[in-house]
Image (cartoon, rainbow, N blue to C red):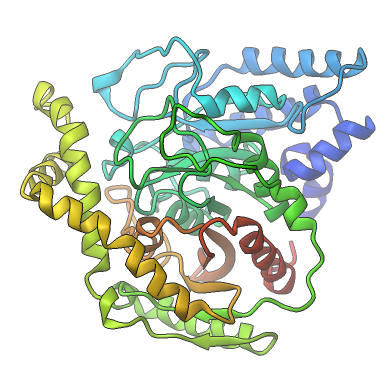
Length: 451
């Protein structure tokens, strides 16, 4: 897309910019929606980000948003802004089929808690985006918007691709290992996984309750804050939600910084899995970043050597528990990979599971001591650029540790290797999502390529 078109096409606006223009009257929700619909018509055959979509419905909602604004009704923070929803999240207006024929035609009776919150904020729910099979490894139809011969990653495949391709400014994804951050890296868009427990999962397919986390995609850090503020309302029906006052990430992001953030460069136990090009790119970036602020390479202690396996014990055990009955009732429909993981999950005892869960907090405390003096961890977002072909969505190993520890993480589209994007991942302390976003915003200002 040319620079000229980016200045005139509403579909290329960030959500924050679009919200400002809507508020000033320089843009209407109808015009914004029409631009996104035009982009979808132009690109859908190449990207295939959507599982369910209704152009007439979203246009009617956009017109209703404009009419409400004209009547003088106080608009919500996302009034008229298109938001796409991953197809494991219940929506009363669209089917939710979990990326598998097993649930074909499944129509929820009510919205998931986060969808209800988005509607309350005025967002236009723009449809359901493609997910992998039951939000695990089995690929969906979505292709990488930068090169359709490459995977978009998973499991939040369509959500990442739709934002990266300017089809919507915001989308919702989920992560149990690497399902938010890896697609963001592959598709060249910002992806954010908040602290575990920050967003309600009521009405969302459960894969592993101790790990499942709701997050989102956007094209600016400010947009991430805007989106997360809209969906972080407390929900007592999700037992893992963090109670207490909800800090506004928009307000946290706006706080002035006294200095540049400092980063601990941690390669993580997955470093041997990175390809040579990715290792060079991350090492070069760490040096480049170190020329502008403090970046210190910090090795993890031996305690972390088995941490990736601990995450798998928790995830695979819960997959066996939650997906085993689905597989048993539909043996000819589920993928061989999912059947394999269910079988592996059944090999772990309850004692294995309890022990793996119990190890997370001590490891987190050990990591905290390493983070003293640093604002965030700088670490790879993926093992390399998006894999060629659509048969695999890639490895989550560069994300799984941070998910297991419940820490907020963000992928920033700052690197390019052989013509494909590669994300830089920043990881913050639990509950300090605002500080992480401030560090991310600094990094985007310093290093993002000029569009």
